[in-house]
Length: 201
Image 1 (cartoon, rainbow, N blue to C red):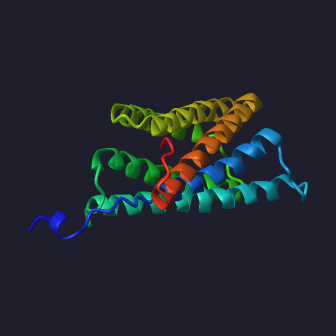
Image 2 (image 1 turned 90 degrees about the vertical axis):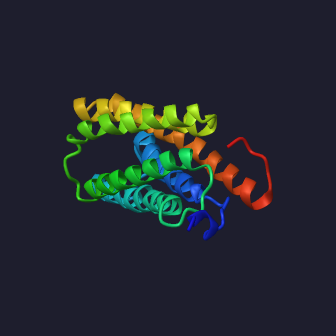
């Protein structure tokens, strides 16, 4: 029996959860990198642990939840239409979420960030894949997001490989700018679905 006849198609994709959780995380991580704070305790270790918690729960859990939700809705219970670009979104949300669990835990335990220089290479590739995929499907707002992610991982590679404060600040700037775009996407998706608006998303 055709599974599409069992499960009705849903237009309510969980994208806003992933967009907003990463946006909040990027505001926290990028803002702290650019402004070097604020830090009420004055303890760099305590600040790192706080950044780690936001990375684990917003960057990690929020995105992984969205990725799993999408993948299940495309495979076990095929309820999402427009599956081709949504598959790319499911892959991206899942992998970015898992990698933020690692980064968040690394920051929380104050472990060595150097090996993340190697992580930045395939994550840059994933971002390029998303750019090509969404641009090719005519979803320019999502492609812009992935261009922002490419810039983040380019800066991440430089920061982790050279321990450059300039590259670290550049990464923070790209995180903040991408966080603003993510917030717009979360706003647009939610208002379009919940209020029948027509934001460019």
